[in-house]
Length: 393
Length: 244
Image (cartoon, rainbow over all chains, first blue to last red; front, side, top):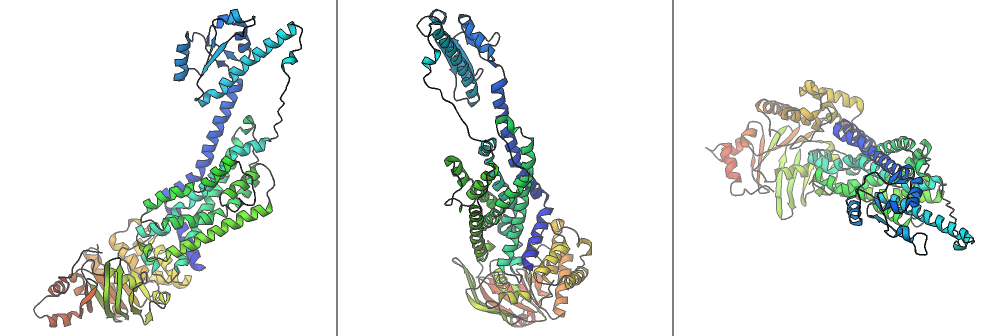
């Protein structure tokens, strides 16, 4: 036990003194929260503009439909002055280059057809592949359709009929999602950032255990000391876990601060991500640290140099995303036959936590137990690999 | 006392040790001499128990390595080919770390480290990080580290490599001091001039076999008129091969 403690303490001190490594360890956990804040800000600003901002839409032949133009203007859709778009071909070109998101072309026969039994036509010119344009297209289309519906209803009234004749069905929507559960969709990404920060926190030491010591030529004299290799590697993995947990705690603290600053309410979300939630999330992800440490140490033990190990471990960072991608695609809920999968089980528990739903004690226990069991298995493998002669390189 | 009997070890198709036997006595400095790739390092690695031989036995202080590697490591100090110090730790911390892993009590450790720092003249650099050390300073710290548990046996792999004249002289003085204390010192080298003034016994190996062994005086008597250098060259010629 004292050997494990001695090795662990030395690894922690040594890493603390490596300024560049330490900088990485401090910046890594902040990466997630910063990206997340940027993501939310973009979403919020896009949603807000589509509701409040005046939308400028060049219109061809506006003089043929003054009432429609006035109706659109009342809904914040205006023609920019001197846009110079004169033909449909021109409009197509300008939409293609992204100069305008939407152009409205009013048919040449609009004023003669309007008011007769023939339907008057307008054409919307847009590029659906530009994701930014999506909400604007919908807005213009919605406004024009509302104008059409209004005129139709007025005509029915004028001819003495009930306008509801043409509306045999009314769809009412009742969305039972709470602001917290809407947020969960977005905040689900959080789990990955947490697992990512946990893994990156231990990466340096996991590599150092084998490839690093070998490269610095300190492995051989170390192995000639009267301590078992199992104790050496357990000491190193303990230090790795310490750094991983510190990194996790740091990223959770940053998230707690960042999520408070974000205008989540503006996009119909709320966040219950306070200190209590963060602490609980820390406890739920904790069991993942030994597993990650053992996994990275095992992978690194096959490599010859620090650099080579870094390359392989970058792929290891992607491993926990696989179950998460699966979970996002299939929109799975916590259930017994999924909770034994490490990283997925943490994701499901944290999603539950963020949705403000109660955690199931049994499923939580299963997640903790299976993650620790996988960790033990990989830890055993890492010890076995450390005993090989090939470890000397 | 280090006893080696018929050690054999291969790496793939390369036979690094092909039946090596020799003894290194207490109170003596034994030089393991051979060209690059002769098997010196493999032999020392087996003695420091980081490698296991395929056949043959090795005993350190009467302890059979295969049977009790941990017990053998307690009576053995190792100065590796390159110092292998931890760059971010100070000289003192490097020595203390090994002392703790040897299981020394903190009070005994502090006294021992202070003594070693004094004796090896490390006071000036004791609390500096190993990062900026010169080759000579690194070797001194590594030597102090190898001696921290007061081992009866000491293995040194090419200890004078990269040292300047003064540092080499100091190292020789310390090794003579260790001999005087009755310790068993085994060092490897590929340069005869470096060791002929120092060693009591010579073991010349080439291509994984011992080709010649004895005291310098014995060897000189067996090949009258030849220098030790010439004897060494004759003993290894024809067996030289590229480093494995």
